[in-house]
Image 1: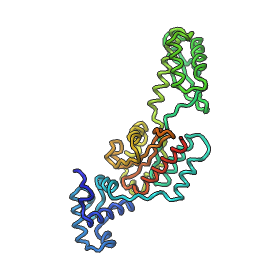
Image 2 (image 1 turned 180 degrees about the vertical axis):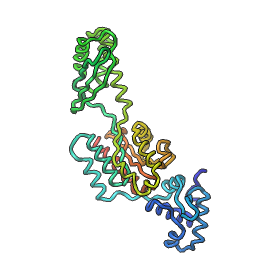
Image 3 (image 1 turned 90 degrees about the vertical axis):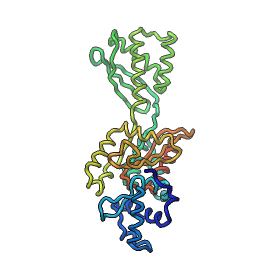
Image 4 (image 1 turned 60 degrees about the horizontal axis):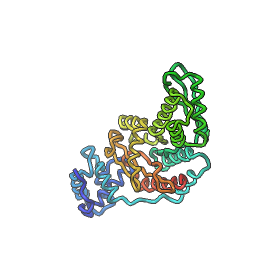
Length: 345
């Protein structure tokens, strides 16, 4: 059923709907007519009539006959798109975000701190997709492991080291490995992998390299391996999963188990956040609107962050139950994305 436009609701229905949603977001429990009557000049019978109408529209649901109402996913979407009034981050929250991001150190440390801070501020789990940066490289070392296999050790200028096991083409012995190591390292120094790959392939294509056929095969195979790995690896930081285990979550352990399993699949989470990369501003995924968290009934609020040239380099966000305080979390995620952009720029 398509959501009715908010303008089609009467003022009374809109006010009651807003109070139900805000009450549910605040407490995590259904809101009854008696609780609503305390803040409105209406009888409980009149309120129950409006609640029934809103339920008929698919905006509210009653988990039990006399338990009150709570918003459906469709109702939450209507609230977020048509009624919610965002609350800008406080001066204290803005200071906490900016000061944490601006701390000296590598960019990865700032991103980890950002994810943890968002978790603390929102009582959800903080998500940060790391920009797919290409570090400057120092050297590549190929170490024989067994017949037909070698360990490739890639060293970056920032001190990071990555290892991969590579299959060797026929005819490559320890001497050939040393030749290939020296050749690639000479082209790597001070370059990114993509820059080095272009230079090496140019040398090989023009016949300027002094490599034999087997060595050229190994160089090409190694470049393909590292390049593919860099493109496919999900670079995702998740902090604050424990926040997802609140009192209401503990009453539904199957949902919690499903959510934590989803978060373990970082490639799928990264794919979801990729949907926010093309957005102009913060995106909100409520419950089954995204397939990944459909079973756990969770919501994701995500915003892209950009470098000084306006290019999207990553995504920052928060995941939590569908009763997230959207009015507070949405502008906080948006402000965090802007602050990260200043750092990346």
